[in-house]
Amino acid sequence: MSDGRPLIGVLALQGDVREHTAALESGGARTLAVRRVGELADVDGLVIPGGESTTISRLLQTFDLLEPLRARLADGMPAYGSCAGMILLAEKVLDGRPDQQQLGGIDMTVRRNAFGRQVDSFEADLDLAGLDSAAGKIHAVFIRAPWVEAVSTGVDVLATVPDTPAAGAAAGRIVAVRQGPVLATAFHPELTGDTRVHRLFVDVVRGRA
Image (tube, rainbow, N blue to C red):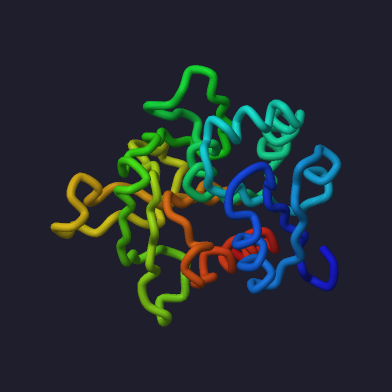
């Protein structure tokens, strides 16, 4: 870390790289776009953005990042995954493609595209454990999002979808989790201007949360 500011990488193979970068820098981190093994080796933590999980999985293999990333996660590197990033960080995925690779950062099972097609995006206001509650609920945007079907006893559930008429089958579903220094959300906090999730992750990387 430099001047107390951790260097956090954003996996720059697909997804909202610019938005995650801006949110992390607002939270007090330095950032680095990660496309190569050497860049992965330099960072104190890593964000895995949304996008298409099978495509990101293939690109990790193409760029020779898959096994180095698995190794860094196994060694305790902090990571945060949003949407497709949540899918990749899971031990198991339902409705995934046979060739999809998992990173295994969180002992959970997720259902890919659980919220439906991209046109069926969903929004909800959530209580998320670990955030500054004085600022109110976090507005969550779900786009072709997964949800968590099951977690092990070592995984903390941070947020579930409120039981409202608009939620439908998503009511009560787990959409934010943490296991040690690894966090994941089914939604895209980088799209709303609310940087509290990213600030929480910066604190995790610093060892303060």
